[in-house]
Amino acid sequence: MKSYLSVVFLLLIFLSSTIAQTTDEILAKHFKLIGQEKLLTYGQYVTKGKIYQGGMEIPFVSYHKKPNKFKSVATIRGNKFTRAFDGEKGWLLNGKDKPKVLPLEQAKGLEIQADYEGIFYNYKKKGNSVKYLGREKVDSINSFVLQLTESNGNVITAYLEPKGYKIVRTKFKTTIQGTNREFETDLSDYKVIDGVVDPFNIKTKLDGKVITHIVIDSIDYNQAVPDSIFYMPK
View 1 (cartoon, helix red, strand yellow):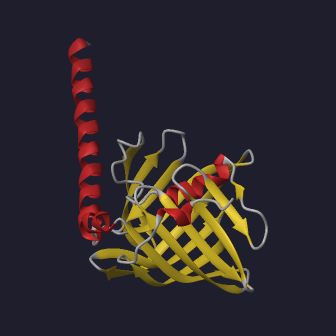
View 2 (cartoon, one colour):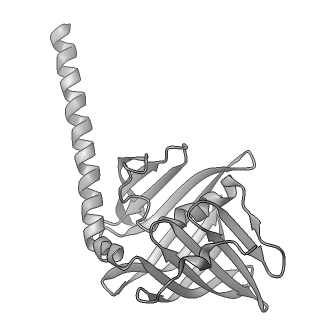
View 3 (cartoon, one colour):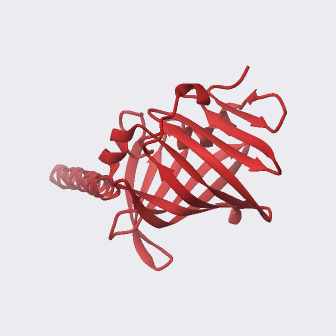
């Protein structure tokens, strides 16, 4: 019995190390092929595009800056709607209303967007874990599946196509006002901008229904982005 248990124990160690190696290999190829190191050298970027939602075409501009600052400004019928994460908290400003701080659960999506490195880069230092779940088809593409679990329990699943190791789909499970919800985002139309590979077409579903469709017009890695724009107005 002891020898049998020893064999099983050794097998489990081997399998766990193999899975870890597979996960690290997939991420290493992903970072290399999307230009992660080049992205980190810039430190900021500005994105312009359009959001298609509720029958409307909404122009927007967003700002990212290392390590975790994000701001997006959408214009609807002449009014500006701002969502931002200043590195510590999320806030919003709707039209001419007073700005307000977002509750933690509502700010979570902004915090994820604000992670300049991306959720998988340095995930261990961020207190998160990643495991390889095998292969699964996404629109006939037999994709690698990686599941990231954050220290707070939130789970994000990413699907990477095996040729360019680009993320073609993500699923994000969270709790909103006591209800479990799942966001699914499809990323496509990838282009190389200043050495970085970016998706220019992004569709997000909530509980299976499309809620936003984003089309990117431009990404600028050379525009200066001051820290002051991320802080909530008094």
